[in-house]
Amino acid sequence: MTPFSFEWEWDIGHIIFFGFLYLCLTVIGLGLSWAGIKTVLQLLGLLWEKDLEED
Amino acid sequence: MESALFPEGVTRCSAKKFFLWTLPWLLILAWGGVSAVLCLWKALNQTNMSNIFAFALWIVFDLGLIALGAGAFFTGFLTYIIGKKELRDILNAAVIIGFICYSGAMAILGIDIGQPLRGWFIFWHANIHSMLVEVSFCITCYLIVLSIEFLPIILENRKLEEIKPIRLFGRNLHAIMAVFAATGTFLSFFHQGSLGGMFGVMYARPFAARGGFYIWPWTFFLFILSAIAAGPCFTILIVKIAEKLTKKKLVSDNTVQFLARLSGFLLATYLILKIADTIGWINGEAHRAGLRFMDFYKEGPYGVWLPIAEIGICGILPAIMLLIPKLRKQTKWLIIACLLNCTGIILNRFSFIIVTLAIPVLPFERFWSYLPTWQEWGVALASIAYGVLLFSVAYRYLPVFPKERELNPIS
Image (tube, rainbow over all chains, first blue to last red; front, side, top):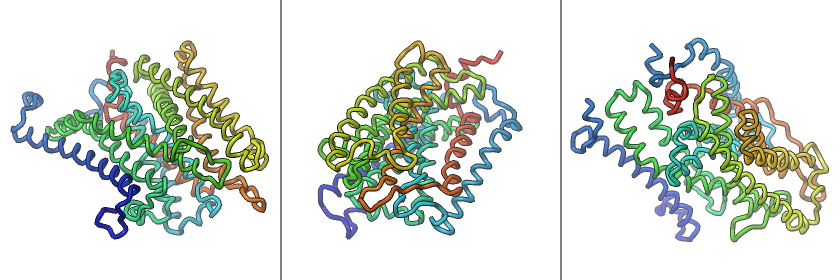
């Protein structure tokens, strides 16, 4: 359910339940994206990574 | 050829021996598969669940697995948030055990809900007044977190690590593991608690109903505490079984002793609160319902032996064993203490699920008994077989125990 769903109500229950759900999903998504983007930048040589020196 | 996949500097048994070890577990998994197909194809009439026993064996397994899997979040919390670096020796094992427990529980739930294709309804048409919705949200998110925590361990496989993008991604993921550990701790705290809270708010069932603090019944806090007391013991138990089977030392004594001591302390704290809660319940909710303690245990097979076994034999006894260093340091007593502790928590979940539903509430009701069908046993036991298989494969091909090479030098 999102705030755009017809069942949504702007009450404390929905805000707390779904607020924390979306917060957790956002943290997980950002964490994965950070690791992914950093990896791509390292592979492209735009970010220094000592592992690259081994190759 | 296969040995190229093994972690560096360690030995593993032959492929034939490994296959023979997996065979009985594969058979149980096949039994579970047949049971699951029957339940999905012919519906839940394949089970002995009813309107009375809507929660049954599968939910006992689910809640048991979720409590025992708490070792993952608690070890992660101690390692990354509190900074107990010595726990890194056992962290990978704890994460894999946690992943097995939660994914196994989710797989059982997939069959239990009857129509897994409508599983997403709980997210989209959420009843925000239900504790089960919070549990569903948290368990699903936590399984994602556990998968992310498991991923770098998989990517550390010797052959996979040779591929540069995979190696870099694994290390980058590992570098921010504290974020995932903190998220996992938050999610675990709430779903472990809400599972307990769900029983505490059953005001129409005096066996389960409890008083509490604000909106949270005491069972909310007791479930969290019992899970973090038993979870690390389950991790120790699995590690000790792995050590016996492989005839190797996999984790240093200091790490095991630290976790065991902590478990003992948490178990003792839990028991004090649990006994206080039981006394409060006898004189509070049960008394107000016109019932005495023994009224709950006078019918059917669930006699007074159940609380004695749960709190006494599987509670106080292991707490004493874990708190006395002389006993704790002997492997035999440590394994017995861990086994009793884990049994105690399963008995606790069993009491709250099965006994609560079995005891009559209204004067014209009778005691309800319930025996699972072979299909229910099949699905439930398949979760154990799946766990054994996944842990065995992980141990064979992944660096589950970082100190293994150091503790078992190849002469």
